[in-house]
Image 1: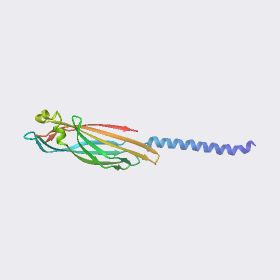
Image 2 (image 1 turned 90 degrees about the vertical axis):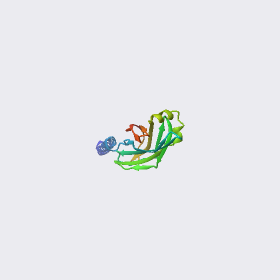
Image 3 (image 1 turned 180 degrees about the vertical axis):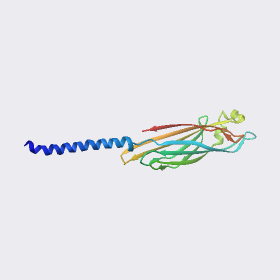
Image 4 (image 1 turned 45 degrees about the vertical axis):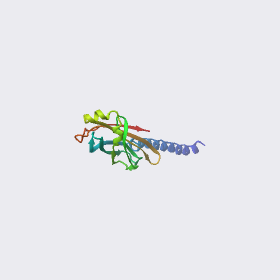
Length: 190
């Protein structure tokens, strides 16, 4: 009777060993190759256009920020992102917004989208900070760009990520110049 069980035990042992090896290989693949990673997103103010600025007889401001958002996807699956929203703030108050439609960054690829954000002059003029800063000729703005999306590997492994890139830039409308933007990026995974 023991002789009959020996082939069955060998078969079960071989199946168990194969399952353990397969589990080890899949785990190694997950932690090295297939593990979803968050995308790297950068946003920069690539230009500003001041086409009109006057304080008297009536205040006038025509200002546009050109923002470039670049994303690199390190995953082996595409990263699908929703609308890219860029907001321009003047002392914390929103004075302009641009929305770029949803899209996709291919596997291990980069993509760049650009947006032009026009500043609402009425909102800037209504700020209590504008009279002094307008006379001084230096207007501090902040741009905040938000990108959110997900990567799905093999239809099972998913990662959701969002990134907020905030840039501070000072506009000198009398000289039609700006400072180099100082940007910080925050990535939220999960």
